[in-house]
Image (tube, rainbow, N blue to C red):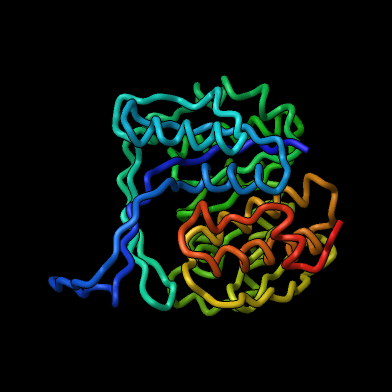
Length: 305
């Protein structure tokens, strides 16, 4: 099966700290580790590890971070032939991870701001030949819209991972076959304020009405809700052995969902498969080391096939 991914790459500069600093506060005692990141790249690597043929469109700088990215994709078997080399530096994300595993992230987009609709158009053959197109939102809105429109034009199933969340143009909604926000992102997409008062079922139903397709609301330790034309289904959580680092868990979930859908699984089963992938990821420190292989995921879910 083939997955096309349009999204971000960035260098993740991670510091594990005793606690997140308050405004004006300096916290010492941290440990630092740089590594590859960015939602698009994470999703591409995760899908490749699960057995998919993956093509990636993103943008990096002509710098050491960009060269390291290309080496990562080569090693992981991700087709990066269409990746743009921009004039600006490669995106950098600064990540603070607390002992609980919770994280805080600040991003400088750099070269990603140069990813435009023209670059997406050159990616058309890869989108057309894919079973599922995965798009995330650390890239310019024009590129998001162009990718979703190409998916619709070429008949490829579109999956939008709407992170980081921002209100979507009205023209985007009908182009989405599957949308996968979490509980924080869903109200932002719908243009709701913090006191909206809607429950999770209301939110996922509202998202499905906007797309006319499938809405999947992830709820962390509470599992997920899937809204289809037939109604709303609860997908139980897949408990983690321990929560070490939540960075990359959403990308792992998204990639596994895309792979399972490309393999023809119904969305409820695909969501269960994805939940197991996310559970594996939060139990391992770092993003790339935490993305499971197919054998690791099969072992976790007790499926030897």
